[in-house]
Length: 106
Image 1 (cartoon, rainbow, N blue to C red):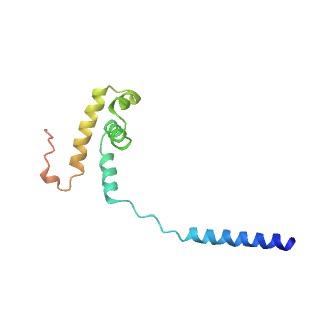
Image 2 (image 1 turned 30 degrees about the horizontal axis):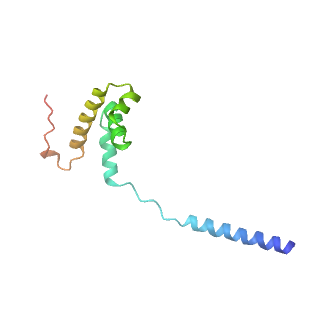
Image 3 (image 1 turned 45 degrees about the vertical axis):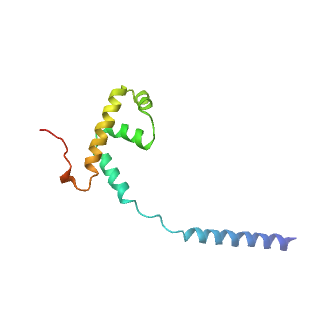
C-alpha cells in the first residue's frame, strides 16, 4: 500500500511539472493593434465629458437616455457631445488630415 501511495504521488508530481512546463511555453500575446493605439490616442485628445459620452455610447452600447440618466446630463447635452466627439474623432483618425475641413473658425 505504501508503494502505491508513493507511485501515485510521483505520477501526480510528474503531471504537475509537465503542465507547468507547458504553461511556460505559451506564445506571448501579440502587441497592441495599431488601429486600437490610434483610437485610444484620439480619445485622449477629446475633452473628458465628450470622451465619456462617446465611450459609453459606442464602446459600451448605452443609449443616450441611459447615459443622460447615469451622468446627470440632459439628453440634449449628451447628443451634442456625441456629435462633437464623432466629428473630432473623424478628423483625428483620418489618414490624410490635409483633405479634411476641420471647420474651425478663429
